[in-house]
Length: 276
Length: 320
Image (tube, rainbow over all chains, first blue to last red; front, side):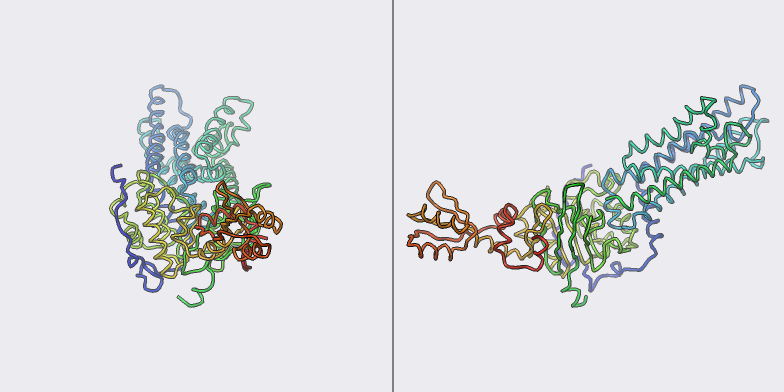
């Protein structure tokens, strides 16, 4: 950064708008709270680089589904679930979206921005809820687009083993990825609000969504527990073939929704009570 | 602006208390801040200044007591930037955003127009660097950005926590001029500092706290004169006899190496009368001219003594 000198601008009191003869910009319009908060949080999210990196990373991770499809196509093994197969990248995409959503809250605590935020908007619970809405929207839109792209490319690679988007469960699975990632984003906002530290929140999130399911799924005796974990339950939405190791698609998504609602609610209670 | 608003306090703190476990950071603090003047909020580091300001701004929840801004708790204001502008610390922003984007994010939260963002950037002289990431800003520019954020809603009340900390003389002069001109426009300016000399130049009124408790709430002039009255330099050939007399009536005395006696806790007139009544000759009897710095040291180091001799003040009962 080169321009680090203080601009030598002497203060002219006449440039300070006073209460009496302020210009039109200083007139206070009574605006509804939520649209104001949403525009503010949206602007915050799009003005930091980490948002773009996270979304790009999530899209690349979803794209891994095409690689899985290519490997599978060459192996000539029977394909049980061609839809779920090409959407397997969600396992990694959820981590990128989770990091984005955690940082939306924790970066404000680590930089001190949270104090500016809460002085401008003391309705803390609404601020956190709005953050959740913003990242959930981003996760849903980006997730659904990446999911659809991966699905179409993956099915093309699978050739005659592939299915079309009109196949049973295909559209539900593709959109389901968007819904799943949106829920993960809300979950991560709640977690970040409770923990406040970026590193701590990301570590807990990765353990819950990624490491724990890997360990429990590897042990057949624990499958009945594993399928109720947030990520394994939620990812059932991408399955088009019934398995004993996972819940049915909508049941699974409902289970994840309960986890998400619980952790967000805990975050809202805590942010309201705790000193900022 | 109505006459009523000019004379009623814009910030009211009543019985404000904050405890962390067994520690009382702020202890039943009560004071008012009025418009049209710069009110200094003084106290040594750790006296509870920042905690008090954070409670006024709704960031920390008081253990008991209330802090009102324009008659309501801060948290009840839906577009608070129009009521209060705050500079809490110089780095309350994300370093990856540009100055312009930082201010836009805050402005949007209160429905403030983009044109006002340009106005405040201009006001603090950051227009030329508005597109730069704030992570590369110098401390002086950080402070200007903080002031710009505080001025976004063109608020009637400004709360500035240690605004001159770490600034160069040019920056200090800039902030001082800004605070004076804001007060002259009839706004309420509450500025915390541990630098007494700085407050002597800027503030009209000071609220002094020590260990979370109110020590003084008075105009700068009367605090300085009250302190001055309490430090008297005395020279006498019968210094020991005088010291004994003064000790007896409870005034504190110290005798320097050059034989000059410093008396605190008793005005010069009384010392003179006491000496005369006992036939003691005085060669010098002078009230020391105290600076606000000295007054502050005296206040915070021996607040009990000050309260015993200071004129009765409505807000002092809470500190008793």
